[in-house]
Picture 1 (spheres, rainbow over the protein chains, first blue to last red):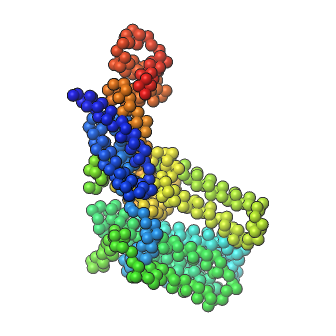
Picture 2: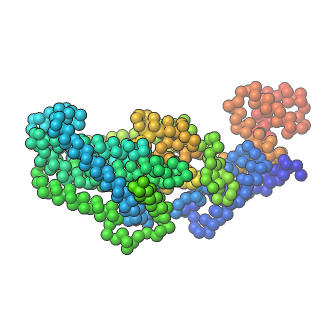
Picture 3: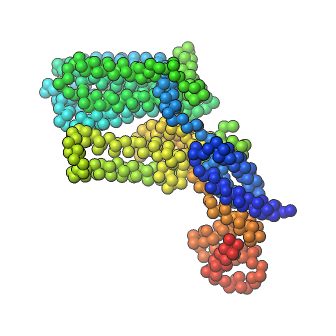
Length: 348
Length: 249
């Protein structure tokens, strides 16, 4: 039998089978019952066999191309993680975020130190050279302070609290995401953002102190600042860990190492974004409100900070309801590798 | 086995051992999809704001008038912001690695193993948009896409995803070819050529398509004299080819 006769005979024999596969393999497999899913896998296997035959008998033909794309569709449907939305969400908040936070602890401490040092530097700089405030504050802010008013006064008159909150929380989330993503520049981007924010905070406190408004600024910052600044340090620490994955890769290639670190640290960003939503509402509704006293601001600020710690530790039921190891195995391994890398870095 | 890249193809060892080959989408298809999606999400966000503004001017529900200004603004602005920011992650998740723009550009998102990306990967990919969009017009992302082997932007590298060309299985070619081969008795390769020529008939120049049609008819219609074939016009050739296949179908 010639090659073309073999191809013809084979194609004729596949007539009904291919028509059936076209309908069966393009549906979403998660909607199938067990027996139907088993049938789906069997059809996938048979399709692979047909594709191999088609590649041999009909290379570069439209039939082979159609089988290739059907195979790709079926492969994408089969090669996917299981769908357990609720348990995955529980695992995220009770295991993955706390595990990532534990791995990040030393880096957070170093970033917090950098932030404190740069705040000190900002304070010293403006105390010594008040004219340099133009580097950190806008002309409108400087004008207001020189007229004995904090720029935050009258914020309600410019925009309603709701708009203000949305604007603030979007901006804060963007800054923390940027601090994380900028870690791709070998961690330097995260350092730069941390240092710049510290310098600005220190400079503004020094400048308002010179005009007797530092108490007002402290009152404004107290309600949202503890969580907002902590979250910024956490995001920058995650960015630094991301940069470290490129400097000291723990996978065969830097790209794989980067991908592992990004996957392990991504949950931290989700936590940061959620915490910043709360900060945005506090900053829009409570912080600029002159009727609320300083102790209440402090209580809100530190109360929210306490909640943040609890949230990042995975709540109070962490050990009682830890999810199955199989669900989070990979993430744990990746997080552990981030931790190991940091440990090795310290040892060196 | 780790996936390998052969020029513009992502080659993955399938679960059965038969290799899976996916064509990687280039910066052009990627940009085209993004431009469409950007317009859709901007228009959706603006449409929401417009509807909200109209509702504020002409309240349909009496309670709308009693809402505080702050709450009213929040209800107006927040969904618009959410539409703009969550458009990509939510649609990529719901549409199995696609968005309307990606669908129109004929691309889809897959993992390095050719599977469907999960929620974590999609979120990570979209978080890195912030970096890819720097300093303007996605310059970082486009540069990274042009210089990386798999045409990846930084978000894709972080999430372990690849944008591939979405070549939907041609139902017509898979279901028609076996039937045509069975009924015409023609060679499978010849039937494929005939089908393809008819599909592309209008896009080919008259000179080329007539030459191809004559060559194919000479091989299939043995009763047709070479003189009759040479004198057949463009429309006649098209008609004969169609008849050859439709008679079988």
